[in-house]
Amino acid sequence: MDSKSNMAWPWTHVDDTVLVQTGGGTLHSVVVNGLTTAGDITLYDGVDNTGDVIAVLHLDPATSISVQPIPFPYDAKVDDGIYVEYDQTAVADLTVMHI
Picture 1 (cartoon, rainbow, N blue to C red):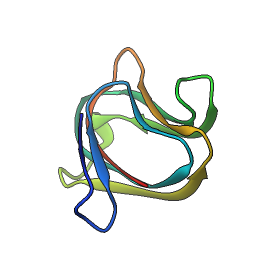
Picture 2: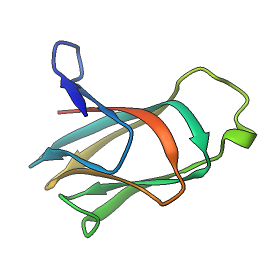
Picture 3: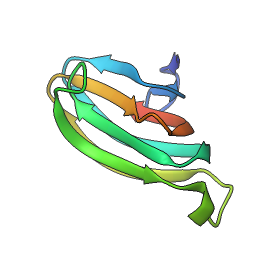
Picture 4: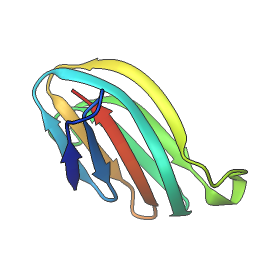
């Protein structure tokens, strides 16, 4: 996991289940940079998968019509953190923008 803060929105590169941020803040957006295997990725307001669900990305490369990055804007306030959980089949490369 790489995290950078020299852009307008700090970002974290994600390719597996990970705690992106602890504490309050904002989940600005998630960009799907690419995927190879269908699956679900769940975003939580929390430090693990017991937090409140912000969103579930249902990803399927068979139905994708573009190889360009796909942004999902949220601008969601989080109270406890941002946790990204990949299911057992998802293989995807994401950029999570957050503060």
